[in-house]
Length: 208
Image (tube, rainbow, N blue to C red):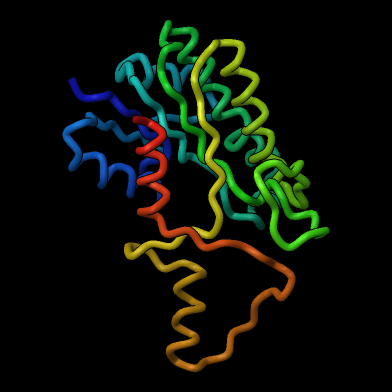
């Protein structure tokens, strides 16, 4: 019997890639939930979707990721990025689905203090903006809620995602090289570009 997989944020770049890949895989019966499907900041809205789908696995790709918008709307950033994943786990526990696996997608932006160029997973996070703090809050709440519910979970931190289906910062840089065209970018940021299919494959490996 295929695993029932529910993806929050299925209308985003990463969520839609999970949907595309898993629909082709007979091991999974996948359900998507985008912005119109549920309000991740409201427990009742999240619980209604989970009650209907009764998933074996939930992948949370839902997030407020625009750094400038997060600075302008810090409460909304906190509700989506921190409270949202907590609502998912709380709903699973409330509905007696604590045996489900929860995969929460986070970000390398939980680091960023600037004292070193590259961080390891064992380093303590040092966010420098609302986006980073809200995503770190989501990690903390995910871990605390999952442990209380005795639920298995993974927190997956991503870096700069790039994909064939959507133009990203990586595409902008590549295009500037091909065209030999100068662009203005920050000189104090260090990151590791992540090909979206590799990330999806890695998460699917964790699920199995």
